[in-house]
Each structure stands twice: as structure tokens, then as C-alpha cells.
Length: 380
Ligand code: PMP
Ligand code: GLN
Image (cartoon, rainbow, N blue to C red; front, side):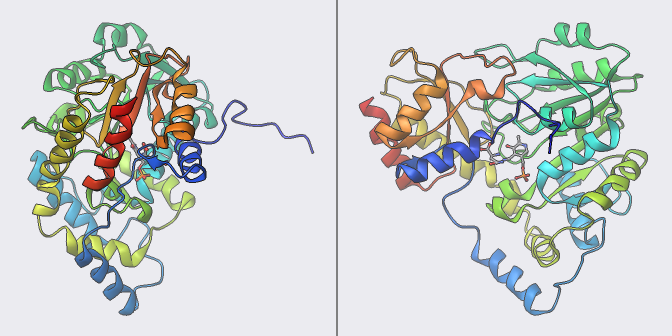
């Protein structure tokens, strides 16, 4: 059979590749972004309770109302914006499905979607599968800031969507209020939808509040916010996330959602709704990860890597040009095989494989894992 691939140039994701390599070589895995510690025992008890109580059949298509109400409360608490749990919030199988569904629901053949590179790896393939055209704009290295003049130049009548992500994976940087105002003024009055990937929303550091699009009235009216509980409660394997958007946008989103997954894991939604009643579970997350960031940065401050700024997420970028001039992909593979430490090379997040000699380390790890990784790093 002749296969006419819709994604001829796409291989396996870097996260799967690096985690497999780490396992094969028994390396410390700071590559794929996930905690190596458990979630709260209370959350596990709640999940078990709801399974034992028999909530093991389909959840409602939009997600259980208790969790949608909880999400509305979280958004109200954090960003002072009301979304209707009934018509404006949907539970998804992780942020990945929220992003894919947003693109599937709104992108037609030939539509242009602006993405900022380095870009999280699920954006461009989803655009291309739907016949859209990804229009990449590189963030300015070293601070990974957006050149808004360039954005204005790239916007045209074919531009249907702009995807933003703050706190940003893989750079570990965050957008400012100024950035959000710029975006708001660019899309205002145009038929452009903003997809705002905010999965690290509760991990913005140094007392800088997370700039959710929910904070900006006119911007939020043409935006879909995507987030994920995987990051917030240390359960990346549960694959439960959500999207929030104005009713008219959500109606279209749900038309696709119902045929892509229909509904999401029922007992875990109930557990999350109960668990997140305690606001400390999300409000204090930034302190937890800021302490990990500070520990990791201190541990490797004397190494030959240059530490890039990290204002959010659980990723720390390092520049290795004082150590090697190898390609970042080759350096990352060698580091895993020879030094037993796995990281993610940054060039894979660029269409043009831009190589600034950067590696991404995930610091969502036990302190002892970070100490062991630092021992390796400091010898390089
Ligand atoms: N967006 C970004 C920026 C991410 O880092 C991730 C994964 N960590 C996702 C989306 C996907 O989240 P999920 O695992 O909930 O699908
Ligand atoms: N988002 C995680 C990361 O950036 C990985 C998720 C995945 O493996 N798809 O490492």
C-alpha cells in the first residue's frame, strides 16, 4: 500500500527519544518534563475513593460540572475573570488535546498560524495535519523576547491564529504585561484567534504575576486558554487539562472535542475537583518550584555552563559553548551516553534547527536527583 503521509518530515518526539536513551544508558533523566516525585497522597486517596464509589463510566462530554466550577473559581481567584462553567470551560485529555482540538476546530486549508520558536513540539504538526501553514517567528536570543514589529509584519488576511505560551517551554521565560498589550492591540478587530498555552500558569517566579490572557478583557474575547493539571498537581500521567474560551468559540471547540475524545477520565476529574478546593495547592506551587530552581542554579553555578534566565516553568536552559562546539543534538546524546545525564537540545524546537548551543534541564526532580545531576555537570 502506498502511504501518503500527512506529516512526512515528523519523527518521534524528542521527549520520547531522550527518555528512552536515558533509560537505555541508565542516565539521570532531566530531559522530558515530569516530576520524579509523587503527587499528594490525599489526591491519590480521592481518586481511589471515587473509583470505589463507582464513578467508572463515561463522564459528561464537557467534563464534570464540579471540576468546571472549580476551574472557574481558579481563574477568578488568580486572574479576576469570570468564565461560565456551563458554556465556557471544557475538560480535555491534557493540554495536548486542548491545543489539537483548538486547531482542528478553527484552522482550514491555507490558513496561517503564527508560532514563536523555539515552539513546543505539538503546535506545528497539528497545524499541518489540518492544512494550515505555520508561520514561525524566532524569539530573540538570549532573552527569548517577542519582536512585535515582526509580528505586525507577518499578520495578513490569511492569519487566523496566533499561539502563545507563557511561562514558556522550552526557554523558561515569561511574557510581560507589555507583551500582552501588544498582542491585544495587534489582534483587536481582526478575525484572529489567540491560543494561549498556559500549562505552567502556576509556575511564574520572582513575584511576577502570570500574565494570563484572562486578565485582558478584549484579548480574552478572542482567545482560547489551554492549561493542564499535570503540571499543577504533579500528575503528568493522568493527562487531564482544560480549555476556557468565550461561549461562541467554545461551542465550535466542543463540536470537535466530542468526536475526538468525547469525554475524559471520570474518577480523576472528581478527585481533582475535590483536591483543588484547597487554594494552596495551586497558589503555593510557584514557591515550591522557585526553591527547586534556586537550588539547581546554585548547585551548578560554578560549572562551565552559562545559566540562562529562568522566570517560569520547571526548565533551566544552559549554554554549553565553553565546553563544546558540537551540534546540540550530538552533545545531548553524548552527554546521555558518556556522562549519564539526559537533557533536551533546543534546536529541535525550531523549523530551521537553530542551534545556539543550548540544553534544557528539567528541575522538577527530588533534591537528591538535582544534587546527583549537578555532580556530573560540575565535572564537565
Ligand atoms: N504545552 C506545553 C508548553 C507543555 O510543556 C506541555 C507538556 N508538558 C503541554 C502543552 C502538554 O500538556 P499535557 O501533558 O497536559 O498534554
Ligand atoms: N511537556 C513535556 C516536556 O516538555 C513532555 C511532554 C511529552 O513528552 N509529550 O518535556
